[in-house]
Image 1: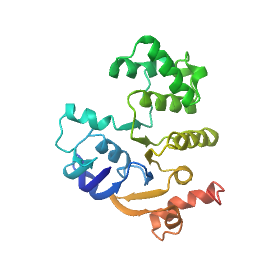
Image 2: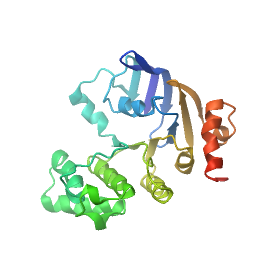
Image 3: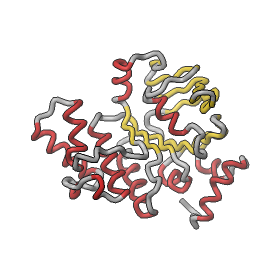
Length: 248
């Protein structure tokens, strides 16, 4: 479904992505790992067409999207549910209205239909009780769940994209978000999770891509990841020892 073919991307004079090539099927559970500034979130933005590569091709469902216009990219974006780390809920709207916003913008549902759909989505992510809460009243974990519900309201995705979904959360909330990610993908829908937390990546993913200096240095399963002799990966794996994790 997703193919990167020798993709390069720079912010100004700084090259973020260098000749990156990989392919990901829509039913795969993939974690993209790497340190800060290695281009992990940039990959998600490139998939969505929010930014364009300097060179190379990005192919979604057999179509090269690199030359598409904004109008043409809308159809591409509807294939994905994207949740950024910040969540970006509207501060002036309560939880119900935040989720309803996308339904009013992108569908022709009646208000009764929107109300039922919002309740269904919030029930799916386990925060139906918080419908009337304002964003500042939400815990970090609840905020992340509402952000996921709102992304689901925008479309019926073929695949989920998560940008640091457990960042800043305590272990209990991080574990709950991991469980939700797995629950949402149980019908065969895959996902890409961008994270620097290897513990959470191992909880949800079956394939791991590791970036260093904007290049792909590892692509494999958990067994190969845990036994890799690549120094940067070994540093990441040391997190498991600090967390007291023996078997994930």
